[in-house]
Amino acid sequence: MFNRRYVPTAVAVAVLLATAAVGYMRTEAKTEMPVRILFKNNGGNVIFSHLVHHRNYEIACAECHHESAGAGGQTLACGSCHPVAFDDDFVKRHIASFPDKQYCVQCHHTEYDEIIFDHDEHEEYADDCRSCHHDESIEPEPQKCGNCHEGQRDGDMPGLAEAAHARCHTCHEDMFEQGLTSCKSCHKEVDMTLYQGDYSSCAQCHDGPTKDLVLTRMNAFHDQCMDCHEKEGRGPYGEGSCNKCHIR
Ligand code: HEC
Ligand code: HEC
Ligand code: HEC
Ligand code: HEC
Ligand code: HEC
Ligand code: HEC
Ligand code: HEC
Ligand code: HEC
Ligand code: HEC
Ligand code: HEC
Image 1 (cartoon, rainbow, N blue to C red):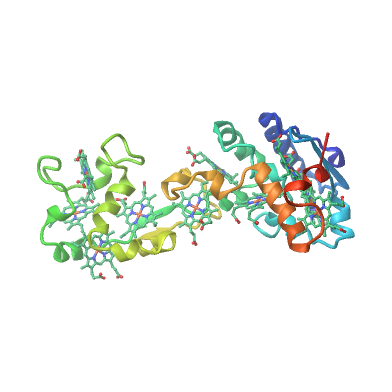
Image 2: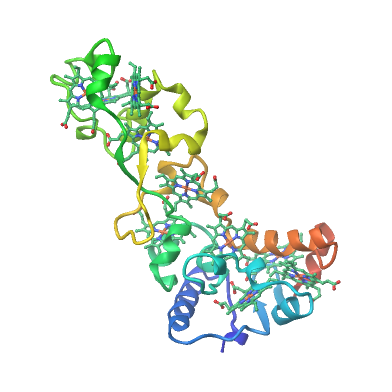
């Protein structure tokens, strides 16, 4: 049944249910590689010669299925990870579209454990407690920032990360300079491989929208198919090429 898989992208729900079903079934039995795949979509159907690409053009599975070299080792539909849109519906349903939890780390790739911060030492570095703690009008006695600052900003009230970072930044500008690679100077990272807990939203650490981090379905296909064609100088790509793949 896999070589006749139709994927109506216009209906996001159907895509996600289908990929979920495929995910479940694949854990049961090893599936054959589909010979041809028909993508039904608003841009016009695309027939993709799967076997020909692999056998005749000698393209290794892992060149397209980049996850097959990763955790889990199974081939998943691109739409499991590259949905039509990263909307509420995706968030609700995406967990069920993966055969096992090893896949989660491809996106939920880090959570932070306890902070590397020696409070006692810092009492000496700073002139007084109020260089980090608020004055008495807000914080009568110094206490944990997390008692008042929660996960996300709420009006004038900054979230925990923003509040703590602002204070640490006054003396440790250098630690934030390298962007994401510098987080480790204060944060111990959790080993996510067998992680079962809650996941932070991407926006807690990343400024840009998720679709800029992980491509949406159309962009994932276009980039992967056409980048290779362009690199090889063979196969359709570029402006005038649409109807070489999209047929009415
Ligand atoms: C040129 C790129 C390319 C190569 C090479 C390739 N595939 Fe695929 N494969 C795809 C695309 C695209 C799909 C469609 C995925 C989708 O429907 O989202 C697919 C679908 C599949 C599916 C069905 C996935 C599903 O969930 O419906 C399987 C299984 C699969 N490929 C296995 C393989 C194996 C095994 C190899 C190597 C022998 C291979 N593929 C080589 C691009 C490729
Ligand atoms: C298990 C989840 C998962 C699956 C399945 C998956 N991707 Fe991805 N893909 C990602 C993630 C996460 C990124 C962004 C991180 C990165 O660049 O490695 C990404 C990045 C990409 C990129 C941009 C980077 C690059 O490698 O050029 C393209 C293009 C892409 N995917 C296409 C595809 C296609 C086509 C398929 C199906 C054949 C597919 N992906 C299947 C998770 C997945
Ligand atoms: C292709 C990337 C990707 C993969 C793989 C992935 N997720 Fe997600 N997940 C997301 C995105 C995007 C969101 C929305 C997060 C946001 O709003 O910033 C999300 C949200 C969630 C949430 C809700 C978090 C909240 O804000 O309440 C949970 C729980 C979750 N994912 C669990 C999982 C589990 C379990 C797996 C593995 C079975 C998994 N995810 C695999 C991208 C992914
Ligand atoms: C360099 C910044 C900084 C300075 C200076 C500082 N603190 Fe703190 N303090 C913090 C941070 C950050 C926390 C929250 C740590 C946490 O959540 O683990 C905290 C937490 C506390 C707590 C709560 C501890 C707990 O476990 O509930 C007390 C009490 C406290 N500080 C007292 C003081 C006093 C008294 C001084 C001055 C002698 C002082 N702090 C100076 C940053 C500072
Ligand atoms: C008792 C509650 C409470 C505690 C504890 C607390 N805050 Fe705040 N914080 C507030 C409130 C309320 C505001 C908003 C004040 C305003 O409107 O300017 C705020 C605002 C801030 C701001 C933005 C305004 C500014 O002062 O620059 C920073 C940064 C901040 N807090 C850092 C911290 C840090 C770091 C800690 C722990 C060392 C901490 N806060 C502990 C209540 C608290
Ligand atoms: C008033 C200035 C000041 C503030 C505010 C401050 N620090 Fe520091 N911190 C220092 C000094 C001084 C040192 C010791 C010299 C050094 O390593 O830079 C230090 C050292 C450290 C180190 C060890 C660095 C290393 O390389 O070994 C860590 C980690 C650290 N601070 C974390 C924090 C965190 C987290 C915050 C915010 C809650 C914070 N600091 C706020 C002054 C400050
Ligand atoms: C100078 C030290 C320092 C650096 C560098 C730093 N952080 Fe933090 N971060 C903190 C402190 C302190 C807290 C508050 C932790 C607490 O009180 O539990 C925090 C909290 C957070 C939180 C909120 C955790 C929660 O439980 O809600 C996130 C998310 C976060 N940081 C992300 C980052 C990212 C991403 C980077 C790298 C760009 C980074 N941090 C770099 C010190 C740092
Ligand atoms: C707790 C903080 C944190 C959360 C939450 C988080 N990330 Fe990241 N992310 C990072 C850090 C740190 C790096 C850089 C890792 C490195 O350089 O080793 C990174 C790197 C990436 C990259 C590689 C590209 C780049 O910009 O370097 C992608 C793609 C990505 N994250 C996607 C996501 C998605 C999607 C989510 C939500 C499902 C997410 N991240 C949630 C901290 C986070
Ligand atoms: C890793 C490289 C690579 C990727 C990825 C790739 N192709 Fe190709 N494609 C080729 C090569 C090489 C040819 C051979 C052209 C020739 O012989 O002139 C080709 C030819 C084609 C052709 C014309 C002849 C034929 O076999 O039908 C179409 C249509 C095509 N590709 C569609 C796609 C689609 C759709 C995707 C994405 C799902 C894709 N290709 C992904 C390398 C790739
Ligand atoms: C190499 C083959 C190829 C070429 C060339 C190509 N596309 Fe696509 N296109 C695809 C594939 C594969 C999909 C994903 C199909 C799916 O998700 O079901 C897609 C999806 C789309 C979609 C999404 C439709 C929907 O329902 O969400 C649009 C719109 C689109 N393409 C327009 C274009 C345009 C405009 C061009 C020319 C600039 C073009 N494509 C060139 C292969 C191609």
